[in-house]
Image 1 (cartoon, helix red, strand yellow):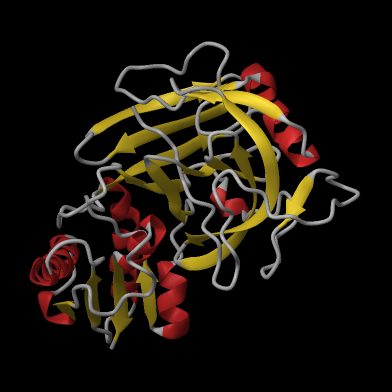
Image 2 (cartoon, rainbow, N blue to C red):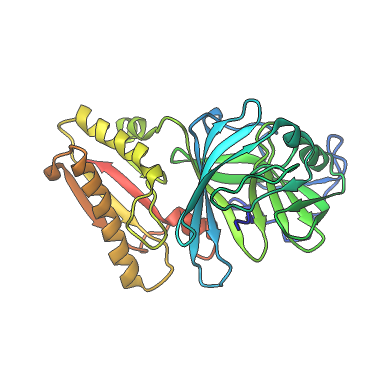
Length: 342
């Protein structure tokens, strides 16, 4: 079973939305019962980069098992279409190691009050339900600040008590992007955060016993080549590994192929590959893991035609974090690969 539960991922300087608690604020004319979270401007509804919704876009959630040990895994979907329904393939990393495909019919995207987030190989979405996204009915009530009840998976119904507009920060093609979102606080103290978009109101965050967060999006066409051309360096979240492992995931191949092509077009350049980890576990283990991950990237590039002498791989362990290691999203941001042309 996979449960999308994710924190509202407040940006620096922006207060987090407490579970089950609304931020008191004057009602607005557009959303009479919806509170506004200050400090960071929330993009207008629907302001989502097109590449995030294009065929072939890859979206990755980090998931915390809920054992209190910071043991995370990843849930990855590849969009196939948003036309005439929602279709996507999905994959769960270890320890789940399952994959499949889902389709949600247009009529359920309009009116369903059940989100089926239970994923197993061969299992279809339940009748009269959505998956990955909420229905337009749920979205419209959230935008209007209306009380409502809906169900997610096999859990108890979520009785929504308040709604807040929130900014949601995510990495899209290795750049930080702020998305418009609605944080729905329920009677049990949970917070379900939904992308504020008409055709793709994805559950990008929910806060509860198990947590997950949308951490990275890769468009159908990787932009690593452009970044290397412009600045000579790129911090990539598109190169991904199984949690706690140096095993590259299939979603990494498109980015690495783009790096290979760039090196082919720039024969005078060499490339430094840095591996970085989060701070879960012993520092010595994270140092070794970062070295193994950088070496795995180097080995992939060599296997695909890049001369070994043009590639240097180094591991920097947990020593240079770019975010807090105390949060699910922060740990995901710290697990990264940096390419620098020399």
